[in-house]
Length: 131
Length: 168
Image (cartoon, rainbow over all chains, first blue to last red; front, side):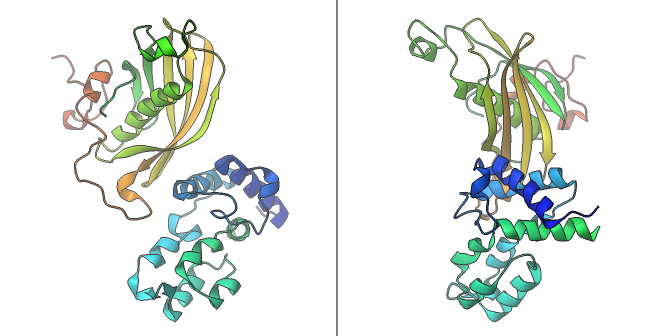
């Protein structure tokens, strides 16, 4: 089954409206889940559950939002920033996220800004169109 | 559970669904103030009833080893007042089950009438994303749930059963 990016976006938008109680016009591609849409940690699991249902696929927990695997590894962090090794690990794990801005200042507190609506759309589009 | 708000379970399908009963009585003190002369069950206490029904259903899937806490109210819609003398049937179903969390859907009915639809998420807090540690003993589930499960007999070997022993 192939889906256009727009179709994926529409469905992801519906998932986020239901999971986070936001209006559809708030769910723009650039919106960050925590900063703009007010998601908390339990919401990430809720989003994963709903995506699995909406798209009929398995979403491994550490694939879509893998931050904790990196943040819990002291080898990848120095002075509150991701090291070069940390950055390259992150790049490998999140091909669906745009790291351009983050790479300029890889402060670990800013890692949550990578969790955008676009990142979810990229991830889901990659998955549904790969099968 | 230190505070029991439902009266008993009447149906229990391990890992799938459970039904509990809650009888509403004018002897419940909060009904004297909510509201004077017009006693209605607070809707938050309907959510509590669903959280206990769903929470025990979820807890039983791990033989009450996991600490199960209410993490999110996904949906809570109410269709009518509940007043003293009403007998509520609270049905919870497991929709999604993962090591970290469980999603349930639920309905509360009075006879044939739909009173509420309540969907919840429960977290297994020892698997929380922040890696926080909690005391080892399971402070969520205590002996009192055995009383709630007195009328339902669960499948599985006796050691794994959380209800009472079947009659000899």
